[in-house]
Length: 279
Image (cartoon, rainbow, N blue to C red; front, side):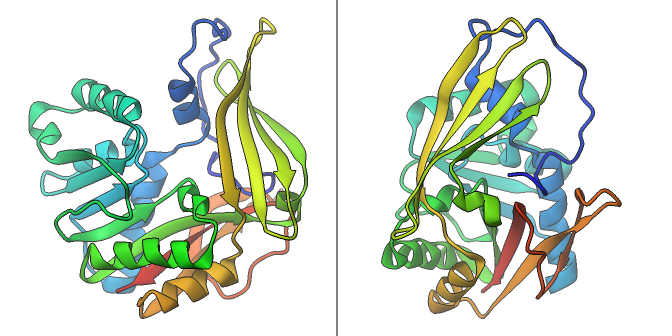
């Protein structure tokens, strides 16, 4: 995703010793894709702007290694988090990260659930999160609406559902986009796009200075939903209002990490946006 990305120009120490044989794909994914500090900042920002209050509980759907949960509970002794993922091996990695990155008291405020996000029952929370475009796995309007209705049911009255989305003219192309990270190269490959159905197949590969590679470290078979479609389905699912947070640009035209509600977006080759749906 070219123009605007979640990699807010982070400064990282070079690590040229990385190789395919010695690297954990999930650790590489965390370094190259995720940024829990910025996303938890955004949660606090949208609550301040839309509700004028501070949220305390989040539910991170498709949580993976639960980095947002970890960051959230570390911010305030009153914060609690629930992470849900269908993959037991990934949740085990999440538990290991919780054990090493949080104090025992903080760990008690994180609950991990192995299950389907469309059916898992949890206590009502202030915010449900669906980040890293994971809900794109729902390929029909009915299945997407079913998930959005579940997110609605899991929210406290006045709760906020936060999602991210990507698009732009490049998102419809079959192409590769490399980006140097911390002693390795992250490669986003859009391997297939069907304009009739909207189906896409995307891969993440990693390449290392010694020439070794981890190909197809992660593969996603999604439908490429557009922002108008997502907003319409959220409203059909019962949400009272949906706002799109668009990223500002620096003098070079790159994303500057500053997000604001907007009704007009730039027709860029690539962009990432956040949606906030109000219960």
